Image 1: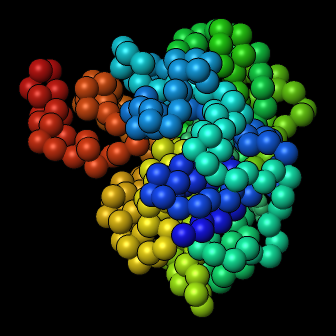
Image 2: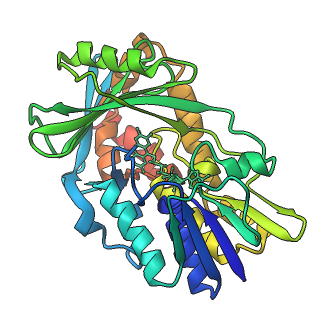
Length: 354
Ligand SMILES: Cc1cc2nc3c(=O)[nH]c(=O)nc-3n(C[C@H](O)[C@H](O)[C@H](O)COP(=O)(O)OP(=O)(O)OC[C@H]3O[C@@H](n4cnc5c(N)ncnc54)[C@H](O)[C@@H]3O)c2cc1C
């Protein structure tokens, strides 16, 4: 069977590898001259998520920093989550995406760079063409109801805890989302701010600059992140099947905007089931809908809290030593894995220990 894949981001390349391993002929089209450019990502990906790709890419070759935890600023109140071990890595996304596309080519995919798809090639189609998917609009898929606009820049960093990301929650400054500083090394960090559209992400980034007292450069990159899923991600149209995957499908953690882990996991399923749209829809939802729903609900609830409520949340979390709970049970990708007896027992133990 011939499988045509639009977009050589991580979801497209992993779909390609998966379809090839199923014995299909694969063509992969990318509008840019190479995979991974322009970079629109902070590159922070969980260790567990990256390990799940070990049969396709050796992430260590693309790692630029190791992350052990986070300093979370809840409208002025600080929470430190320190796992004491590497839980995530900052990747060079351009080289990571390049390696994934190269792997697809090595395994037999035909790659077409510099080719923007405007009319769709014959055969079964996978739309891995990002948040503004033209495959989705071309085939009349339902839209994505919620996007975050982002503004990012590279800043000099004071080197304080270079193995911890900094997260800033404040719906006054970053409406509906958050701001971040992700250390790339001891001297530089990727700073960014997002807000639910139609909010102004440049204004949000300026607010972060003022809040941290760090002067940010004028050159900024802008992008968007889908933070809600499409209600439908696969269909049959005439004699062909069309599947959406990754950002094109909205398979993104709404809490953080991270899309590589879920996107590539769904991409494996898409590659295997390229000719079976109903099964694809069922399988990826069975595997991931609960976690993606949990991310969405947390994102939505946090996005409505006032500064006072965020500070109260930080002090309640400290009182119940939530940091300790997260250190032991935390899971960056799968909130449902944290649901267990310890979620109730931990606060009770904390109270008894007082
Ligand atoms: C500011 C920011 C920070 C982020 N930080 C993180 C992070 O730290 N960790 C994380 O996991 N995720 C992060 N993300 C999200 C992550 O970048 C995406 O979820 C991920 O890139 C999605 O992969 P994808 O392959 O689905 O889509 P994309 O990476 O968007 O790839 C789609 C590809 O399709 C190509 N394309 C589009 N249309 C066409 C066409 N018509 N014809 C041919 N080619 C086409 C594009 O050029 C692109 O290469 C961040 C996003 C933003 C905006």
